[in-house]
Length: 97
Image 1: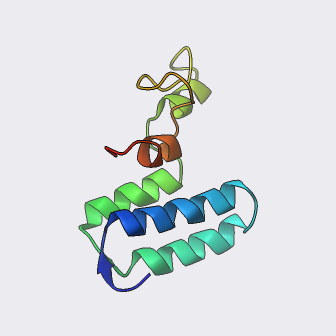
Image 2: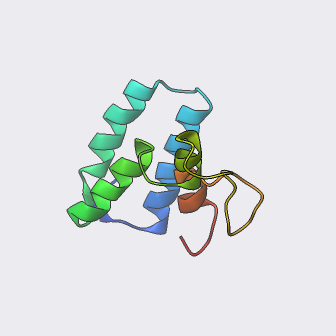
């Protein structure tokens, strides 16, 4: 990533990186190292960067995370009711995200 503001393009590049880790094309350690290198050059408020970090670490209170802790009955997304509500699903599956 070049020195830029957070944009749909940078969101797309982040999604591709996340998908690569999910599919096993790169190790989690390699991804996290590259992620922090990339994220440091994005000109965004720290609260946005912290939110991105929390989403990568899977610590956002999504239905999937709550379901794993047995706090909700099912992990399905209430918007589409087709997929589990994960950080990736919320951030990259909808145009309004």
